[in-house]
Length: 237
Image 1 (tube, rainbow, N blue to C red):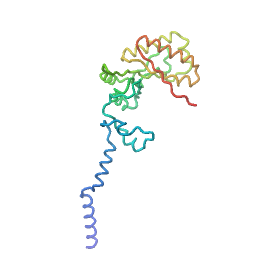
Image 2: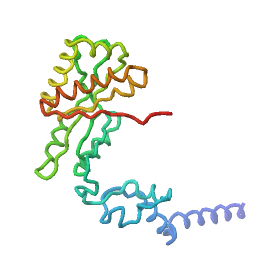
Image 3: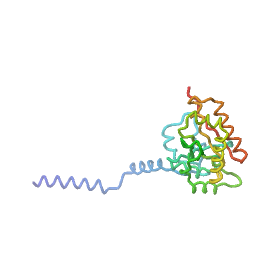
């Protein structure tokens, strides 16, 4: 009995010693290393100064640096237009667009669509629009740099016959333009990104029909100082 008691006491003593003793230096270093890897936010050096722009990047470098960015978010190396998309199902995109406002020239929120079966009035579905985000983006504009807001317009579940109707019917063309102009005026958009090439051309629609509709929309909206961007995905051979 005494032997059993002694063994239990010794085991408890070892357990207490292991629990209460300070961590080894090795564990402290490893913990700091892990915390350092998890850091996300601005840093003092850009990707070139951190030697991250290389021909063969390492996996650990990508994981280690993915959440870090150069603190001067207004600095631009690329002087041409930069278009960024923001999707409603990823709220981080809207946060990123504000953080890196100075990097973009155009932002396209994936908000708008012409619903299927609504080809008589061409009323845009605008339920997803974030009014506060628009105000915040506008507030970041200044005389040196401004970002244009060009929501994506999707022709949701439309068939080839629907696009042909616009091509052949001047009244349908007018209704389509009125709807786009009304939304732009109401929400202070700078134009639109049209996502229709993949939907119609790749589905077998006559390219001249789709091209006519795109040009018609662009020409009409340009008269009202609105920009049009046509999204054309890479061809799949």
